[in-house]
Image 1 (cartoon, rainbow, N blue to C red):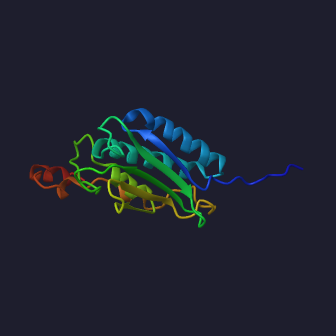
Image 2 (cartoon, rainbow, N blue to C red):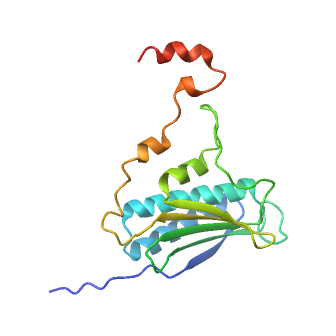
Image 3 (spheres, rainbow, N blue to C red):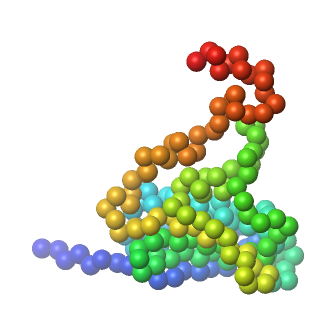
Length: 183
C-alpha cells in the first residue's frame, strides 16, 4: 500500500521580474511548477498563469519599474500564495503609472485593452492597492478555495462573462443593424 503525503503550496512565493517581456515566461514557469507541486488543480493553475501574464504585461506596458529605474530597466514584483482559507491570490507590484488600473472597453478591432476584462471573467475578485508611495499592486483572488473538489471546473457563467457585445450595442455602427436582423 502506497502512502500519499499531501504537499502544500508555499505559503508565499515572490520574485523580481525584469520590467519588460524577458522575465514573464520564467515567472509563469515558476508559478506553474510551485502550484502543481502543491496539488492545485490544473485548470486553476491555467487561470492563475494567464492572470499572472496579463498583470505582468500591464505592469510593463502601463507602469514604471520599482524604485528609481527607468522604463525597461529595473524590476516589478510578482507574488502568489494560497492563504490559510485556501484562496489562491496573485499580485503584481510596479512603480505606478499615469493612470489607475481599470477595465477598458476596446473596439472590436482593437489589438489590446482586454486584459483586465479577462481577469474579471476568470477571477473571483480583484482590486488595486496603492497605499505605499511609489508602488501600485494589482491583486487577484483566482479561486476562493483551491482545496474544493470543484475548484478545477469553470463557472457556468464563464462564456457569458467574456462574450463581446452585439453589434447593435456598439455606438457608431448604425449601418450594422441590417446584420442583426439576419439572425
